[in-house]
Image (cartoon, rainbow, N blue to C red; front, side, top):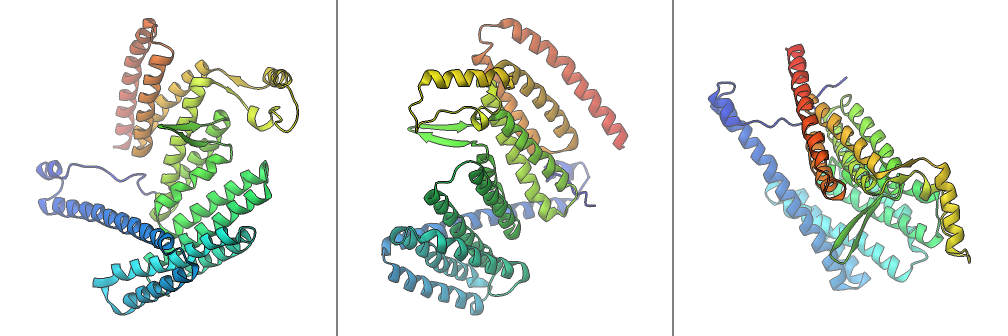
Length: 402
């Protein structure tokens, strides 16, 4: 069993050196490594954004399948040649050339299929993307062909082509219901596997988007407005809660490479759960109304009165959680999670909990208690013994640890 720390520890190296806990040389080494990690992240982000922009820009600029295929092949061959013969000094140019070339071939093929052969596109893109991803994944895990950076990027390109084909297939067949939810689960699973294989936590984190959409939780954009939507906040919270618990359990039992990905899934899942709780605290929830409730049949001549009567009949038998109950339960849960995360050293969950506690307090201040001074009196006096209890608990745990 592995018991790595659930977080990277933040420390003032200068103060540690002054206190004699570490030496000046150790402090300089820690600072240098931290700087190297930040610089590497910045370089990789800039390189990835440049490759993506150059690839898509060149495809649309050439606007010809033959020209894209020819130019992409030349760039791919040139990039691989630089990687094979150019040495470490020019490796970045080799990576860029190989990835822009591969991206033009894969992306150009996908765009051409959608534009000129829409009906045939998913039939080609689904297996074609899967084949590219599998070849690149095998090379990534076993070594060979080219650098890990190129292997991982081509794996993601193949995965994108495969999932784009799946999206087109769902659109063409117009499937609904459980098959759509199953496709979202499949997409989330593939993103987690790809994120772990490439060791890119951003890809792993993206898996939460289709995972949340299994219950229609998502976002939307209107003019100058971004909207978070959760038609089933209670069920979505349960869904995310199970994910968070599973990822925390897994993170303490696997190697650090895998634990990093479990922690990012737990953190993003926790954030989505809190956003769902925010929706519930404002609107309440009739559990299951959008899943197995009556629904409005737009294809029929059903009257709104008939639909409303059916909806009220369903609500009378369903589990209904009011907005006020949601607000109280969410506040209690946040307090408990803040205390637990602080004691267990889970910084990401602690920071997220504190952030949503502030959002919850701010929202309820104007939504529910703007003209209720007694609520502030009760809340303020209740916070004092709560803080004292957390302090005493911390002393007890520290003594037991010592």
